Image 1 (cartoon, chains in turn red, blue):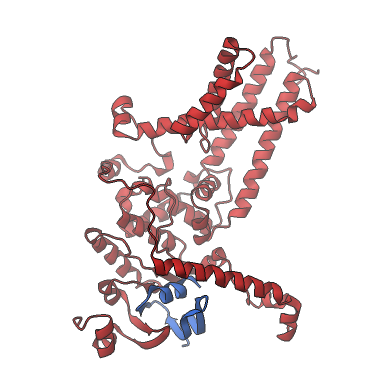
Image 2 (cartoon, rainbow over the protein chains, first blue to last red; image 1 turned 45 degrees about the vertical axis):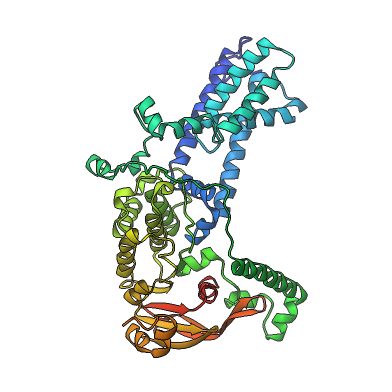
Length: 440
Length: 50
């Protein structure tokens, strides 16, 4: 074997090989760290958290996934090259299942989805392997399996995830006296941070494995599935060429003329944005991260992986301004899953606003919001209508009459009446059906 | 409507055989807010999700 860089000859004790592997690891670790802290890394976290929501903020996930698969393959390739170079051996053994399984075990032990998970997992795995193989050279894999099962059962996010979870609890705070801090670009002046640090709400009631389904809704869902299946069958039955020929167009002209159903991310980019009736957010991202991600996707900077997100200060400042507009400024560095439901509804709207919509579809924005939290939500939504066009669906009559400049009343799937809130509330039919004759 | 940002023209939609939007036409003006009132949630939700 030739000396490394023509200077360092691989020795029998593996000292040079060890340092060489360590330096390569360090370089790639720095690259991975840079990637995680970039807008691209933020987009990857968004995809992991909620791929459906990514489309609703106008993000195309596939190019991101293709890119990270390619980067991962490059890293795996370099790791394989280093292994071959340091062991000076290439055999079919490097392709066997056990090596892949070892890597998987290391990641599960350390914690998948975490930058340091692989490192911690590798250290634990190597110590455990050396120790167990010393105790029982023949069946050392058995206690590794037991360790793996224990981690999966009791620490589903790996050892690192378990420690992070412990630190974020009251007991962990007492034991460790410190908490995991957000990335530097998310830190705001200390005065604001202290003001925003609310105590974690105590869990008084916990429901698990509950499922409630309205019979009508279940029937509607079955009908919807049948409808989609029927439509697919019809699509397959109609030959595309025949359909377009009948319309006097070439087969591909329909798509060019816009006669195809736009994908959700395309609609968002054209300015048609919606919120969800049931919250669809990024639970482990903070509101500031989630809104910054949306702005990065809108500005097409989410694909850059070599510059940290902190370099895009304008995007972060804009995200903060959007959150301030919706009164989420004080909680913008808390994880979304910790926020009260009303604030999560506001975050739904904040994500939609960050896409700079022309038309905003609000699907029951006040659904499920407790009365004590609804006033903030109402005033936030009311302030929106001056800037953008809003189509909204809502059961809360107070919100409807406060926000709408025009109202459409539908009965039996047809439009009964269209007019201003005053005209609608004065109509005797509407008063009878919707307002109980009391509104006025 | 000349300055309409979004318009629904003769929209018909439903779940299976149940029609919840039947020949609906309306337009949304720029910088306005339009609310839809309906006795059932399905028609409104359908108009938002189409």
